[in-house]
Image (tube, rainbow, N blue to C red; front, side, top):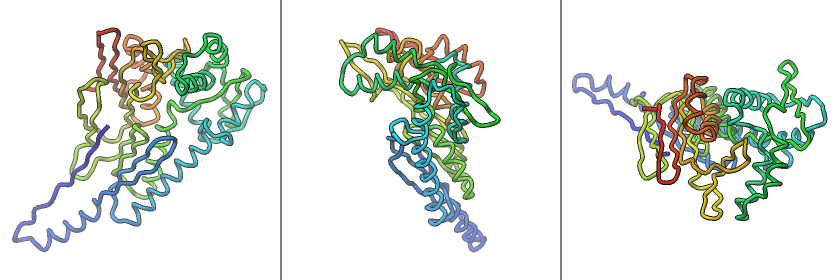
Length: 333
């Protein structure tokens, strides 16, 4: 994805030169563009902020990055000491497990999307995701017995929630939570809240390709985002105050016996997707966009059209290829 913002300059009239210069300088001070980047959650996180000065921009960016770092420490399944892994370790214990607000909220959102998409998105896929990570890294195809054993430990219906006490229960031993399918979107939305607390209204957070867009750059109607269709063509869209997520197997996939399997796993089969080229989703927030990009990738075009009715504020562009035939479903235009 590529994005850009441009300033529009004021033209001062001769008769009101002093007056306009004053306001031009004031406006310019409010419209300074700052860019910050840091490696977080295994991806580059980029902030583009319009702020009145260096001190506010730096303080806001540092606070936003700190918030993301704290989320990663709690929610990353790569870290042995993370809260999410500690919770997963208690699966099957029949205990109601107290969890942080962040973990409860993200799992609750995930579960709601799972219900609406009939499991096309599922935050309990940790066991099967682990198998595919190893297979992709070492270049082998997962054994059918391993896949079956891992799938037996998954299923969004195996999580229970107690909203009053912020506790959850994982009903099957060996369950492993994995919120990778919406974690970066959630982190981007939380970064938005931090920036807003500093009075910043115009910004964009790029969380490894998951975008949270605030108000557009000064003088622009929206942020210009260039997206790929999954082939050689690209298209520019212009949006503000939305979340945008794109998923595809461009960089992360397993190639085995002439077939390419995506890192996105079908929760029903436990196998990486074969026909998915690219999915782009535009949602009211980045969390929903991130999760639905995965859900629609799994569901495919036909089922996806049914699920979209439950998410009326969302737009989807999904491209699939079976053999030499490319199919596209686009509600963004």
